[in-house]
Every structure is written in C-alpha cells, then in structure tokens.
Length: 579
Image (cartoon, rainbow, N blue to C red; front, side, top):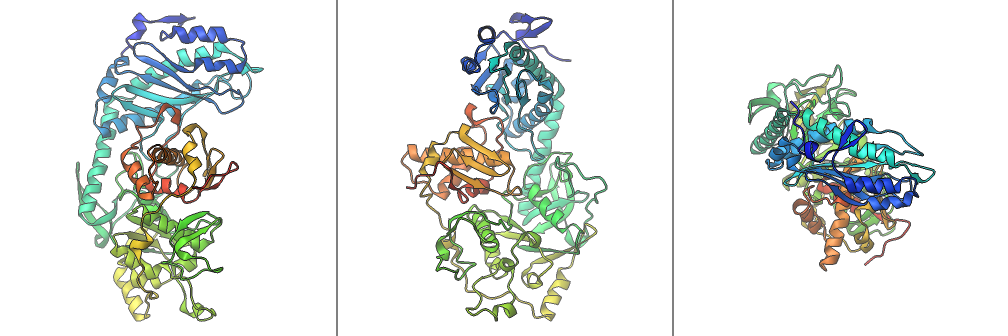
C-alpha cells in the first residue's frame, strides 16, 4: 500500500489534472519569468519549501547551451513514514538505503526528461552508480531526511525562458518520481542489503584474524560486466583443498580461496584467467552488491593496482630504492619530471601507494615495465656503467617485511619463483597450488633475486610538505572539472590519470577534497603535508560533509586517489603560484 505524503491533503495546488507540492513562491517566479531573457533564471536560486518538501536550486547556468543547472530535493522525515526510520538508522542501513534509492533514481529520472526549446533543454541527470557500494553525493540520508542531487537543463527558446516546461518537470513529475521510489524500495530490500554489507564486514574481520589479505568464496565468478553481474558462460571458482580456508560469517561458515599475507605469484598460460583474478582482488576491496559475481569475495581496503603510466607527471618523490642513478645528474631522492618513462612511472606509482599505506599491491607483468620488475645480469654486463636499476624483485621481501603484501602475475621471468611465499597456477580459470614445485624449480635452476643493499624505507616514505600550488586553495567545487581521467582545478592546475586508476566520480570527489584541504590549511595558517591530507580525508570528510555546491556526481575516493591527483598536478592555462 502506498502511503500518501502529508502535504497532498492540505497543501495541494492543481495544474490541470495533476497535483504539486505547495511551492507558491516558486511558481509565481516562474510565471513572471516566462519569456524573459535566460539570465533572469537566477531569481530561482535558493530553496523553495513546504512543511516537508524542499526544492533547492543550487546553481543556475546562465547559458542554455552550457552545463546544466544543479538542483537538489530534500524530503523531510515527515514526508513519508519510511523516512523517519532510515533517517535515524545505523550507518550500514543508511548506506544501503542511499544506494538503493540512488540506483532507482538514476534509472528513473532521465525518463522524465521532456525535451523542450533549444539545445539540451528539459533533460534530467544524476550520477549512475557503478557496482561498488560507496557513499555518494547524489543521495544522502541523515536526521534531516532524504536528499537527492541532480542536474536539469532549464529549457529556453531563443535564449528566452520556457516556464511551463520547468513547472511540469520540477513541481509535477519530480515529486511523482520520488513517491514511486519510496514505494518501490521496500524496508525488506534495505534490510537485506544492510545484512549483506554486515556479512562482508564480518568476512573482512575473519579474514584479518586468519592472516589473509583476500578471500574468494567457492562459486565466485571473477568475470563480470560493468554492472558487476557475472558474464554469461563464466566459470565459477572451484577451490582445491591446499588453497582453501573456511571463514566465519554472520550467516555461517564460508569456504574459499585464501590469499595470505606476503607475496603470492600467479602463473598460467595466456587466457586462463590470471589478469581477471588479479583485477577481481581490486574490485572486492570495495563493497559489492548481493547480485555481484564477487558478492562474498573480499580483499583488504586500500588494495591498489600498480602499473606503467606512460608520460605521467611526477611531483617530487624519492625513487632511490629503485634507481641508483639517472641520466643528467638527476637526484633520485628528489625525482620530478613532466613526462615519466615506463619504469620511473611505475616506481612512482608504487611509491604513491606505499606512502598512503596500501596493504595489498597488485602487479601484472602485461601492464608493467619489464626492466622495473626484474633485471637480467647478462644484459647488465653489457652496460658501460653497470646496472642502475634496482628491480622490484630485489626489494619485494623488504616491503613484505614492512607489512605490505603483493599478488603478482608472472610469466616472463622465473625470478619471482625464488622470492614467492606461494605460487598459484591458473588452468581454465581454476587455481592450483604449485608452490612446492615452484620452489623446487627455483632451487634446481639456481634462481635468486638480484641482491641490493637494504633501502632506507623510513626516509624514503617520510612525510612530504605540499609546498606549492597555493592557488588550488581558491578553487571551489564548482570549478573542478573531470572528464575521462583529466582533472582540471579551475585554470590553475590539471592532472591526467589513466582510466584504470579510478572512475571520474571518485576523481572528482578526490579533487574537491584536495582543494578543501588546501583551503583548510590556508585559513588556519597550517603547513599542508601528505600526512595531514590523509588524516583530513580519514576523519573530517566521510562523504556526508559535501555541501550543496559540491554537485551530484561525487563518490568517496580512496586515499591514493586523492594523493595521486596531487602527485600528477601540472600548471593549467592559468598557471599556479608556487609558495
């Protein structure tokens, strides 16, 4: 049974045969604006509310052909009985409700678009969530009720306002959509998703107690489409006893593939699932839904993929652990370059992840610089100055001893067998434990990693002052632009990041957070440091602190995603001011 909102009975206005919330002032402004120049729409800015329904116009675009205007709608707990429960619920229940409401809102809202006037007039849009369940700015539930953020291309004809289309969209169709969503998402749906999220939390706790960094249950399907659904015909995971562990969950014992702390190497012929399995570990470090192929697969939070990034900009970092020297008398302890090579970009990416505390690092030979992973001493003997690169195989045990774990896909170099804690072979997408055989091969072939003097990791990974780009503090959320991995902070600075690094919504949120941190430091006369930024993100910014000017399309980023924008910044067309 659908429960009617309280305002339908006592605050109803009629437009034809439809009902709308009593937004008298808003409708009067629209009537006055009809046919006026488009710039006059700024009179709509602000909030227009009844007792339990609020329509907020956060930013009005002055050009009908520019980016759409930003709006939000807030439903107070009194709008619908179900909202009173979720507005005071625990964190996981609110996250579950936000996720379900936003997915339905994102699917339904564009269908309510009625093209009117010139250009994109009349189109609605909100963020479309990916398979990960994370805090997003598009939907928020708190003690004040339920809020949705979205954009609307306000219609115009010949740069003249078309008020009738606006009234129809915002005070007729939009409230009807919201009522439909509240009726369609049941309390049972939210409770089931919250229980699923709780089970994943318990699984992670069990995994940690068991000394594991990842766990994929029997029957999991690593091959998924962009929504997380299993690909048709994909092979479910079958676990041999030697690789299996059982973990306690809130619903019982689960058997699955265990990836312990340390260094795990994946081997196998081409197209047998090595990369697919590796990428699944990154995906399941986030929360995923119950219909996902990796629904009950978990990995430690903060898992990062380390790959080559050709031509990436590198701000100052210490790469002395991996490069004894570089041409041109480059100081490897203060390495900085506008366009990095393959090996230096991957070393910088690893440094970036280590400094943000990534507990699990994923490396695929196919996405790596060969000379960064391993080095052939026979080749080194031909070099006039000897080998200048210290390969990762020479450092990986040091990093494991410091608490970082690795999963490496290897096929071109057997050196990994000499340093691996365990080796898993994939055949037709199914894992087999070949650790003992791999160690025998390493001994019989006399394989060992190149030796190098221990690196001074405490110094290499020490805190860093963010000693430039003060103009970034001036960039408000509305001036952050992200498209296909290109992040622009006003006209002051920009950063290019590869698609596999993060989606645009997470990068946009990371950029907004980065600018907020710089403003925080400027306003309090603080010295901005990496450690300060990471603590600021962990504590002050939980995804619920986004203001109404932040937009509808932000997804909570990881620590590395925020730091990664900073380490890639280069001057924009406006040019930054260095401190």
